[in-house]
Length: 123
Image (cartoon, rainbow, N blue to C red):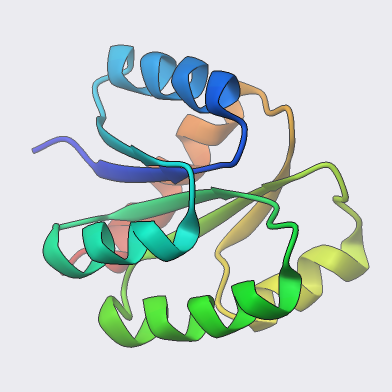
């Protein structure tokens, strides 16, 4: 069964391009422009990985991250951010994010991270 991924990003063109590339790599992909709206998909779908663009509203994202982990404690979360630094990545990973990758991202690296993360999270 292919990994099921939920992509969340506020940039619609980026979201469309990334979802097309991940689908062509064999993933099942859902998309959302808003993390709050994505909670419905997270709650009602079998999601193996959540790939989320760097949120503009970091404090709200932290609350949503807690809710995501409550709903799906084993989901792998990968954040795409233009702010990748070791301090930023360490903070994000302490909050339960599997990894941070630069945005825009190398699709091959993202695919490898998803494949690396999902076997650890799927029972």
